[in-house]
Length: 33
Image 1 (cartoon, rainbow, N blue to C red):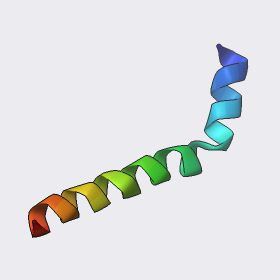
Image 2 (cartoon, rainbow, N blue to C red):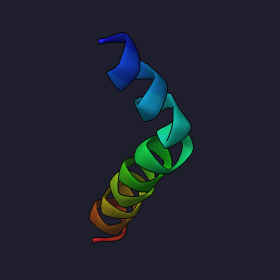
Image 3 (tube, rainbow, N blue to C red):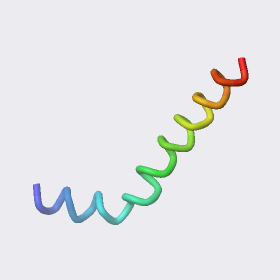
Image 4 (spheres, helix red, strand yellow):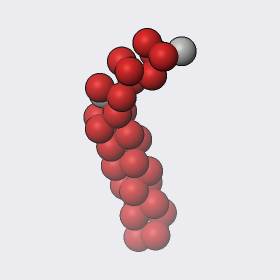
């Protein structure tokens, strides 16, 4: 688990930013519609 956590933290910025961007886009689209 420790090795997975360390390797995951390395890509945490990209791994967390992308899903949030897609979520915000989906929210904005639903609000506009």
